[in-house]
Length: 429
Image (cartoon, rainbow, N blue to C red; front, side, top):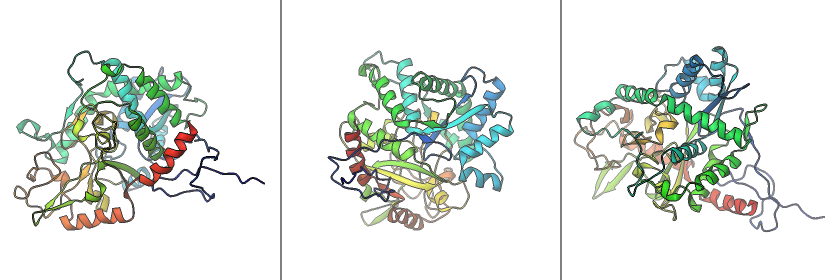
């Protein structure tokens, strides 16, 4: 009797969920095809899309549109823009998609289907439609009038000095781009319908891998010279491979956790830099999506640190943070260590400046104006005004928490995962 061989797909830590005997030599193995994901709980990293069950896009009223906009852009993680009761906090952290659906049902909108799609797909959709509408026509790099500056430098940028100013500025931009957020949603639904990815009778089941493939085919139909900008080639083989790997990470069911990304030398990463016999607090720049900042901030976009700017060569380690969701100021270790801005996914693609993306916080023992902070362009002095970046713990304690995350592999590269996933994708193709 012939023994059946399988390709075992490792999880994000490089280990195997299945108890099936796995073999490293997969030349003669059969392929376990990826299955569509039925969305009963949150997926790891996501953006929301929505449509009317009976008639997608056509019958969403202005009143319904207002409720959708308020809920999706201001009342979902990281929830800085909404006050919740203790019970609601527990519910939204445990299962946000179910929490949102209950809110829609209570508001009399059970006919509006709310879905999460992986962030990598949402951002690629955003780029695809941006390219179509804004083809590059000159020799200068493509620029976007949607850039939102969170640099925090100069008298005109004082809006990011406190969390209250941060929230106020963010809300103004959410309202400013409200129609564009809905336009992108409608285009995504049209795309899914056109290519028969969205089964209205069973809308919670979507084949993410097929969608990714179709998006990349459509992007490649646009001449490269019409879509080059500060972050260059989006469609190199290497970058497309990283999108597939990221999709696999983000589409997994997730309970009360999210992923953050960083491209850097993993061995060197620390919240303290030791140099010339001195210790400097270091604020690490991280992202909720590997494409955040792609149109607005080339030097803060994670994919540009995972590969070189041309997207042809690996440039740094692909680092993944798996952290629990938390509420701002809730006293958790996650809140002590990380600041995650309340900027919704649509806007993150276009933001620029030092303070728009997640980063590690600064110890409460750092002296304002007297101690250099590493990790910022220009190595800035810490200003008392940036209270949302100040931790409730001292610098050395933050470093202990960070190193513990590394020890238990909540902060890790995904080298082992890449090794097996790449073999699987080649054989599947």
